[in-house]
Image (cartoon, rainbow, N blue to C red; front, side, top):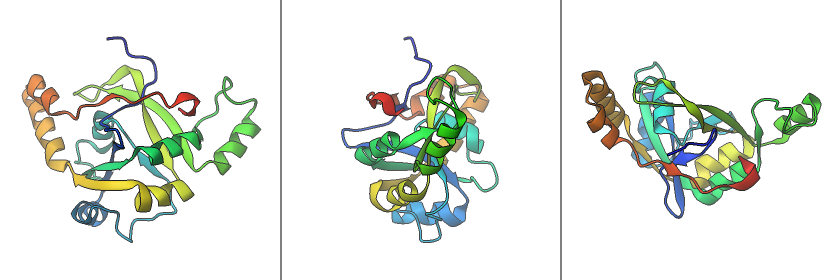
Length: 192
C-alpha cells in the first residue's frame, strides 16, 4: 500500500481518537489511575500529543527515558481533536503555505495548536519515508484537552516494554501484532 508523504494514522472510533504522551510517574501514575490529568499537570504550557504509537516510542525510548517512564494512551473526543486541527498552524515556516515569515509568526502566536510532521518509525524506531502528525496544544487547546476532551487515560507502559522486548529478541511478527490498530484518520481537509 502506498503511503502519502503526510497522513494522520491513529487508533480511532466514530467518536474518539487515541493519542500518546509520556510523563514522569508524578504525573503519569495519577493520570492513569484517575482517568484524567491531575491538578499538578500544567494546563498553560505547550503539550505535544502523538497519534502514532511508534513515534511516541521513539520519543520516549520505549518508556525508558528519564521523565518519560509512564507512557499514556489518552483517548480524546474526535470533535476536540478536529477543533485543534482546525485552529492550528504549522510549527515551522513554509513558503508554500505562508505569504511571509511575519505572517507565519503572527499566526503562530495566535493559534492554540501547532502541526508538526515528523518521520514515522518502524519497530526498530528507524525513520520511514513518510510522516506522522505531532500536534502541539497550548492555552485554550491545552486546557480543553485536559479538562473537556479526555475520555480515558490508560497506562500502556507494560505494552511498550513487551513490544520492545520482542523487538530486541527479533520476534517482529509478534511485536507487530501487539501494536495498536492505527488506521488512516478521516481527512480533516486543509486543517492538517
